[in-house]
Amino acid sequence: MNLEDIKSVVEGFSKKHQIEVLKLIKTHSNVTINENKSGIYINLTFLPEETVSIIQKYIDYVRDQESLLKPVESQKQTFKETFFIEKEHKESAII
Image (cartoon, rainbow, N blue to C red):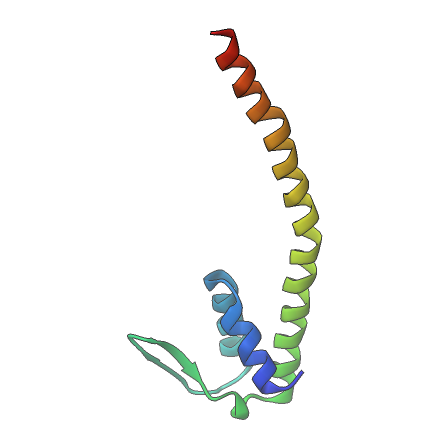
């Protein structure tokens, strides 16, 4: 994964995951971090290869977690629709 891909993936992350990436960068490198009212900017070309590798591992971790959670969340939504919505219809029919 090149730096442009990393940038695109991190920009697509939720704020929580973006903050975690920022923490990784602050912990593992001495790169200058610029902040203004529009956000935080980091010149990724100055990141050490080790830090880039750590960020790639974090990206893989987040993707793995999302792929594992997506079916569970889908099943949870199905159960909710099946059991709770039907229950509401039955209760309103009884009244």
